[in-house]
Length: 369
Image (cartoon, rainbow, N blue to C red; front, side, top):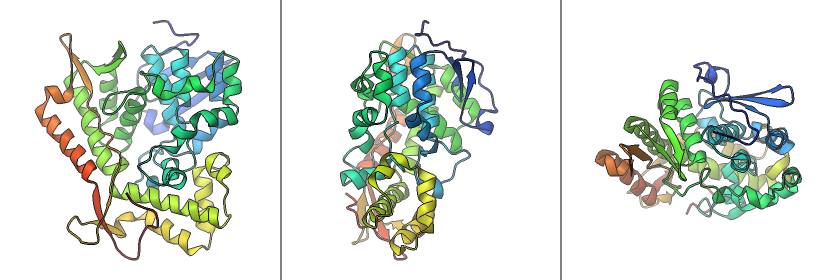
C-alpha cells in the first residue's frame, strides 16, 4: 500500500495506550511520530505536519469531544477533539487513504467552537438544525490560516469538505472513518467493551471500493451494539441534550452581559478556560445552570404521561455495519434479526424523543423542539 510520503509504522496495539493518554505526538527529526489507540504512524508529509502544528489544530487539545457532558458523565480519560481528529487521520492512513483524505480527516472537526455542539442552539436556534461547525467549516479554514497552508500544496478550503470524502463521511447508519473512530474510543472509555475488544474489531475492519466493512460477525456486533447504547445513554440521552442546552444558555447570557465575545466562543477561548471563568461569575442565571449541568438527573425526570412534559429529540447515531462473509456483503441487520429489532427499537425511541418534566426549579429558556 503506497501512501503519499506518509511512512506508516502500524505497530502492535499496546495495553498501556489508554493508561498514558489517547494520543501522543513527538518530533523525530523533521517528522512527527503520532501514537494513537488505533496504531502509530511516522508522519513525513510536510502538509500534514504543518496542519498538525498549526495554532488552529493545537486548539483542539482543549475542546472536549463530549462537551460539558463530561462534568456529569466523567470517563476514564478525557477525550478531546484533538485525539479524535488524529485518530481519524491514522485510521484513514492505515486503510489506504491518500494525502487529501488524510488532511480532510485531520481537519474535519477543526471548526468546532468552545463546548462543541452546545453552540448549535446558540448560533442556529435549535439542536435539530444541524451542526454549526459544519456551516462555518470552510470559512473557518480561510479565516484561521489553514487555507494559506493548503494553498501551498495546491489545495483549497473547499477541498476539505468531509461530506465529499466517502472514506471519512457516510450518511447514517453506515460506517465511516469519523463514526468508527469515536465509537471505538468512546466504547472503551465508557467501559462498554475492553481494549482487547477494540483491537479485535480493528483487526477485522477493512475499507474497499468505497465501503467500510467487517469480516467478522462478532466484531461488527460489538461496535453496533455500543453505538445504540452510546446514542441512548450519552450522545442522545435526555441529560446530555439538556446539558448542551443549558450550556448554550450560559453562553447566551454571557454574551448578553458582555462576559464573553462571539470570537472567544468560536475560536480564541477553550472549554475549561471558559468554564472556570463562568464558575467565578456571580450571575445567578449562569450559576444555576452550572449546578444543573453538574447533576442533571436531580433536575428532571422522564415522564411520558405527564401533561406538562416537554419532548426533546436527538440525532440517532446508531450504526448498522456491513459484514463481508464468504464474499457476500450484507448489513448486520440483514444477518441478525435480534440486532435489527434493537436497532429499530432504538430508532423509534429517538424519533419519539424523551418526554421530560423539570423539577427542583430547573427549566430552559430555549425551544426544546
